[in-house]
Image (cartoon, rainbow, N blue to C red):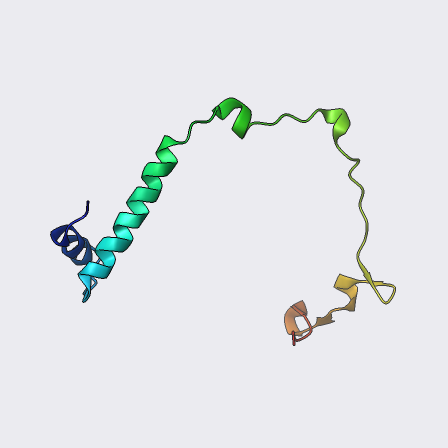
Length: 91
């Protein structure tokens, strides 16, 4: 369990003046309990973290141009001085 001194020390380390240390004690306890529960979970990391997909199962990558009113987006944008591109205002 976390005590008041640890919370005050943590506040000093991060240069924060903690007024209500009791509130933070319960919050830090909840966080630590959650991590303790996560540590209890058993899983097989090889099957959980890695899923192999064969090359044949992948879709074909195709280029599809993005057109606005029949023009490519880059040509539709207004150009500013020094050839910078100005995008329309977002509303």
